[in-house]
Image (cartoon, rainbow, N blue to C red; front, side):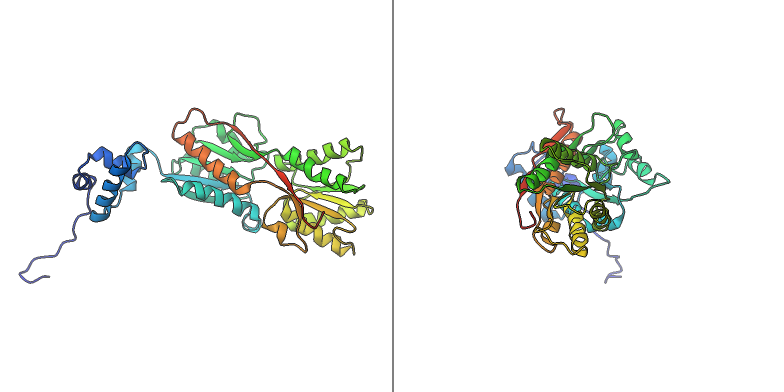
Length: 341
């Protein structure tokens, strides 16, 4: 209670109309500024932002979503378990690129990490209208999300989807990258070269193995020394052990990811052999894992952060109605030479 018996009431929140009057512009102009439209002159943007700051105006996102039938959110779907997602620096680079692009927009990012989804919660979530589009990375053959590309929700894939269709995706030429890494081992004089591939239910695993085979065939050398792993260090360690059991004369090894190469290093050391004197090793990614092993790793660089940025940019363009969004987006790779080969 206040003196005089009156009740102190909380002031009402400023409205869009009050901001428009303060800035001496129309309500529609304020709305365009709040929504980040490029069709407003810099002077008007400055005036409206000054009015917003003076009045402490906060946009009502819920009302805007109802009016526009949009959520202002984008989902990042990762069909892997959390251990892999948080343990592989490749994912960190991709997410950094995605958030760098979304920071320039009004959209928020929702992260969904799930290796198994027997009740299809992810699909129900995507169909519920709580997000305007989705980015999908590390997908496997048979993922339901690949079939969702034909439905209303806009999707952009990180990596070429294994299922046929006119999908929007960002990738590198994994066949060429695998051949580049393997050819380097040939060029430095290695004669019994093997590979630890990624999973064969993922296009990246299949394509990097194909690159190894092409390089070996071009060199007139056998391409039968391969084992399959799961893009983890532990999986690659087991695969390298099997490879060394089968091919004790191995003197070169192309590994389909830098993280897996750390597992290969451990298996080679376990057998009393050294890198690069006994076995030269080449990885793939040029991630921080390339510098976290017992020695700097020669590797095939892929621009992971920029790939994430491009994925987000393509989705935003698609959501904005851009009719010229390219569907097949292939980014370059190159070899980075270090001590391991």
